[in-house]
Image (tube, rainbow, N blue to C red; front, top):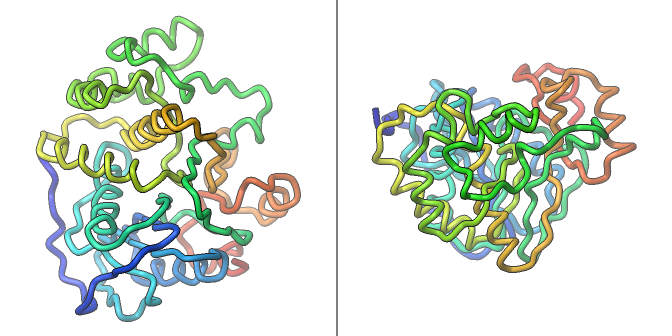
Length: 301
């Protein structure tokens, strides 16, 4: 089936955002109004510089945009999402389009409600790309072949190639995978991409021009049946970012959010936070922190 809209009626301001910002932060929220307000508080405490926050909120509970800080806005036409699959990427696309239709900015950052900032982050004032995970920080021997740039010629058989090298198929082969996503192959090749590139969704940073390209192409893909269930968000944005960095000779930095995929995908220990703060200066936020607002990490930050 194609995109399904939520048709929920929240309370919005009578105005829309305007002006220019150094960064637009887009977040996905399926929890409740209290969680959105909590992340607003966390961002307000740690984000430095000129920024706007756009939330794709599709929780069951009513939310009033007027209860949020003036730099926080809600997407009007939200869609139904599920963990995994392509809907998370399209929800991010909705938030980006809301920003692109109303403001201009230098860079965009992607978050979810599971992300918690633990140290101040100064938003960059020049084009920046963050699309490398922190996995080698947690495991020096981590094999990241699946998220490395892979020649576009391998699309359709990338999972087979990865397995032949003793790796796992990842989002190229699981649940359909990018290898079977012919429409996305067409989009990538039309753009002239020579590589695909993987990365976790959360904490990626990419320039305004990349956001425009992604938003445009997601509009094309939004009309197709959503019968492909791989995590498209882990390959789509980073492929655009990588190609832009390749063309513009821009460095690729670490994602703003650190996720330990091997051992602690869910962060529930303050000692872990202290470890990150003392040893990983490139990590400004962590994920995934439990939704419980009484969790010790959420209380501290």
